[in-house]
Length: 33
Image (cartoon, rainbow, N blue to C red; front, side):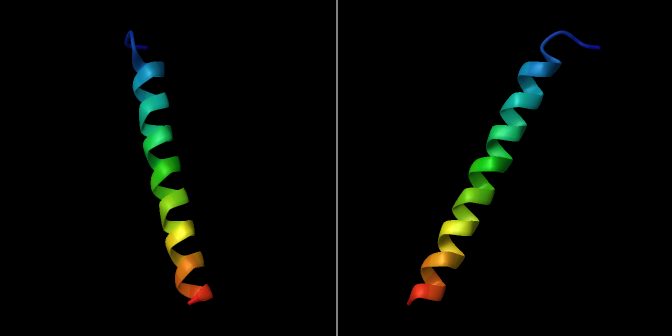
């Protein structure tokens, strides 16, 4: 394993998580409107 791989993976996971949350909030808002 490369050094810092865990950090990089954590960053990617956080990025995907925030993107997912944003998408959820957006669709949720559209449904309410």
